Image (cartoon, rainbow, N blue to C red; front, side):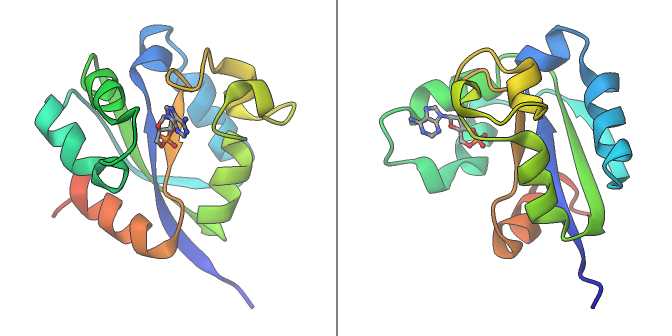
Length: 136
Ligand code: CMP
């Protein structure tokens, strides 16, 4: 059974700043995910707080929102078979120290905060996160 899904991916400020956008997008394409839409934007801290509101009770919440709004990001809709799980595999573990060899966070992540990429973690969140950045 084919399970074609869409998921949201963000290339975070640390990776945009280091000119890693093309390399990261190539990795998604090499892994058979289609980039359906992409745009480079910068969001406010308020918008970042809305985006990450599931984490609002976490001790790292303020730091996380300051960081995501600190510079340009690239947001993308990725599509493909099991795209949500596939994207999480391609990204690797949240903390680059624990990420699998060859994963984006292992290759490019600097720290748990500056971990280069974000991806939706479930079908429900994928819908919400896609709608957050691509309302039309
Ligand atoms: P991301 O997948 O974007 O989702 C939330 C982010 O919070 C996560 O990546 C990390 O960059 C950041 N973060 C900072 N500290 C932690 C932590 N202790 N556990 C999980 N995520 C953290």
